[in-house]
Image (spheres, rainbow, N blue to C red):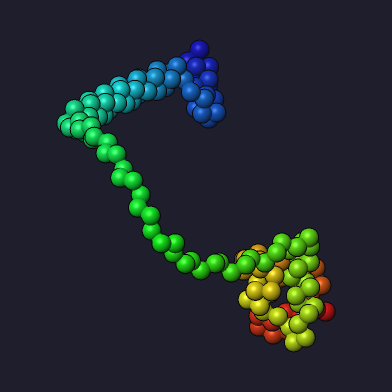
Length: 146
């Protein structure tokens, strides 16, 4: 009988199955941790209440009526430069057309100025066109049609 019990215990240990005893220990530890968390929650709540009580209430400000606006001479303002008209072409087609128009090749900055797109967008389009094989890299930062 003792041999069977020892064999059973060794099998359980080798399988690393939790026993009733280990489960009870885990439950005790869990309850202790829950108590610690509950204490810390109550202390943080009381701290928050204490700091809320220390704050002074703000005084209500009286609203002043605005004085009537004086008429002033109209200021001459510079008009903003007209933005590039949105074309019906896609951004990729715009960049590709700008590259085709240049005889020596084009840089990202030049393509940005001619298309009116953001430099990040132009860079991404050029990268995509390079991967597709539609354009080639002539020199560092200069791109041309194949």
